[in-house]
Image 1 (cartoon, one colour):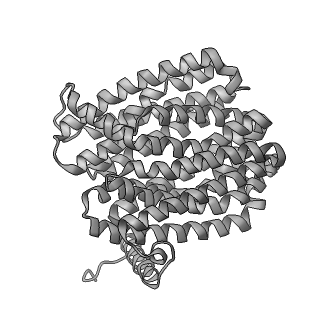
Image 2 (cartoon, rainbow, N blue to C red):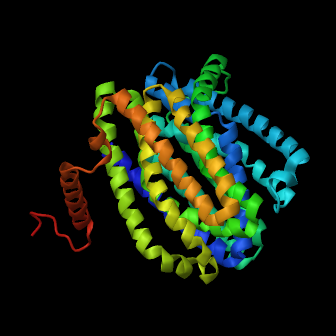
Image 3 (spheres, rainbow, N blue to C red):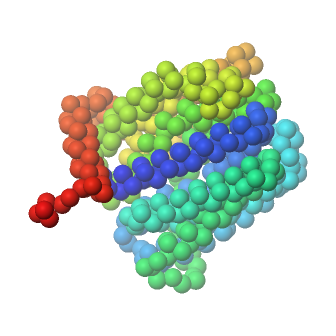
Length: 444
């Protein structure tokens, strides 16, 4: 668990570094308005992915962990589901654009929206096979696919924004190139060691869809609750303010990279462990995630007023205020992610729908009320309040299911610091052993 979590954390750290560098480059070269347009285009692609994938990734993890189906059948079912769902998603989006495009997505170029839609099948197949690798405990291979995609994206971004300046179009092409690179790596690595055959395991596909659909309501409402504010900012304030807000959100969400990396490894573990084992493990993971995220939030609270203008340019100074308001909510959102993994891993994904729905409803209602009155600060406050509501609900459900102690689930303990110390010493000794000046014992 620790080894996989460390590797997943390292991958997430690289994703964070590349994502931050890319965000700074886009912001500085395109300005607030170009940054806002690109942020919305990327968000549309992500929205289509989350709307249409039916949470089949969770189905893959669950059925691999169950051990009752052959891996080659699961791989074939994942590919079948990815292709079918991506076609349905793309067709639905094209029809939506034809009738309501400018009404719901003002300020965006229609053909760029269509280009982002064609990334849906690429992302579906990539993600399903990445989940297959994680479920079969091949985190190193999963990490390779992420790195390949990141490097492909960033290389193209440098080429198409710095060397051959193509503006927003260049950024979109770079995004597509990174996705295709990750797809190629996923197809190659996921099927290594697994007998590959072209087939249609219809019953397994149906089971995927049924299980995924149960969880998808929670996943979808949760995602909409986290991202609809960007569209509402665009509707009320325009693309320019989306540029400001996207930078504030992006910097605040740096705090989620720890929770996201641990979440990826934790889900297959909780699916395969007994109730007692997972109920002991998850509180430890949750409280440490909350603690470390809170430390990061304090750092951003102190540094962001000068850090954001320094990195993104003084023109993005309006991003700081919403960033500061978002920090408490982002910390709780990280804890929410960890506790929700336990609930899904115990085969009860529908329960998470309650918290996700509360988050979505409160977020939309508060945004509609606060954005016209307080602008970007209102949008950030709406998110923090809705994230807090969701965390309280998920925590209550988790405590009831696991019978864990409240304070042991959210407050750091003395033994955790001892673990930090032991881990630091182990890392330090490994670094010293790998140093070029280190002389192994007994060689003098």
